[in-house]
Length: 99
Image 1 (cartoon, rainbow, N blue to C red):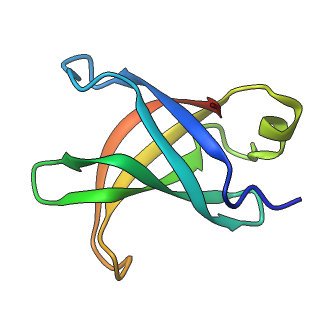
Image 2 (image 1 turned 30 degrees about the vertical axis):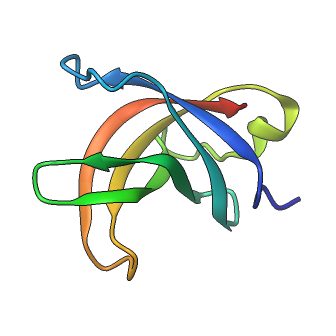
């Protein structure tokens, strides 16, 4: 089952200095349950990159995004990416759920 087009909420746990609140967006790319690309509703600025695209991968080795389809949250690592997906800036640790 593809998650493409699904609305999600990303709850940021780290960095602890995060002051932008939860992130909302839609999944635009689902790579076999191991990687998601989410188009955020707002643009986010990191240290090197400003983008509305974030690439998510499960935090735990061997975990997938399959449990999202059962309405469970998944712990994630997230990196800002540019449109070409060539530039990546690690940004957050948190969790993702359907919105």
